[in-house]
Length: 359
Image (cartoon, rainbow, N blue to C red; front, top):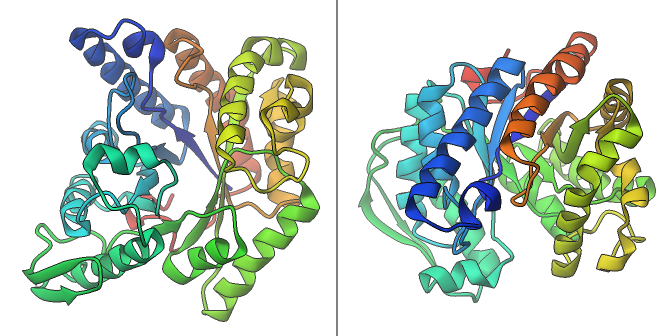
C-alpha cells in the first residue's frame, strides 16, 4: 500500500494571522520543511493543493511548491491534490508541470479537476460557464501536447496554433493524471475516462454509499481496459492514546470538516450533510487518529473494507496545529504508522504512480 502526505499551503499561524510580507517566507520555508521531513519519514507521496485569493496562502497554486520540491526531494512522488484546470490556458499550466517533471526525473503526477469555488474564477476573471467542457478540453489539450511535438488544437474553449510543450515531459507519454470528482456518479466515472486514478476527499465514509460510488469508477475503468486505482485523503494524528489524539487534534478537525460541509462537497455519507452533523465523537471513525495501533488499523481497514490503494494523510490545517507539533507528527507517523504499514502491505506498481517514484 502507498501512503502519502498532504502539504497544506495555507498557514494562518505563520503567515495569515499577522499578514506581513516577511511572514510569508516563514510559512514557505515551513511547508518545504514538512515535505522534506515526510520524505525522510518514509512517505511515498507528497501532495499539494491548489489555493488562490486567500490571505494566509503562501504558495498560490501547486506549481510553485512542486517546482521547489522537485529539487528538495529525491525519490518521493510529488503532485497536485488537486489542480483546478479551468483557471488559465492549459498549455501555460502544462509548461510549468513539464518543468517539475523534468527536475524531479519523472516523479510528477497531477490530480486535475474543474474546481468548485467561484472565488478562484473571480480571482482571474475566468469564465464560469461550461466549466465541465473547459475541464475535459484542457486535459485533451494536455494529451495533444505531451509528445513534445508541434501541434494545433482548436477546441470550443481552448485554442493553440503551432503549439509546443517545451521542455517535454520527462515521463514517456506524460505524467499520470488522477481524476477528481466526488459528488455525482458522472463525475466519478469521468475520473476513469480521463485519468489513471480516482481521488477521494477527506469527508466521512458510509460503506454502502462508498461501494456504490467506487463501483461506478471501477466498472468504468475496467470497461476501458484500465486497472482501477483509488486514492483517499484522510486527516491524521497519532498520540499515546486515542483520547489524547482527539483532544490534541479534534478541534482543528471539526473546523475543517464543517467548512466543507457548508460548501456541500462531501458526498460519501448520507448522515453528514450539514455542519452540525459533525462532532468530534462521530468523526472518529472516519479519520486516522489515535494511538499507533489504531492508526495502523484504520489504514488497513480502508485497504481491506474500502479497497483503497493509497491513503494520503494530513496532520495540519490552515489554523493549526503549529508547525513544531506537525514536524513531530511527521516523524512519529513515519516510524509508528507508515513504515509498519509498508512492511505489511508492499506498495503496488501501477500506471498512476510516476515512473520515477515506483519503489
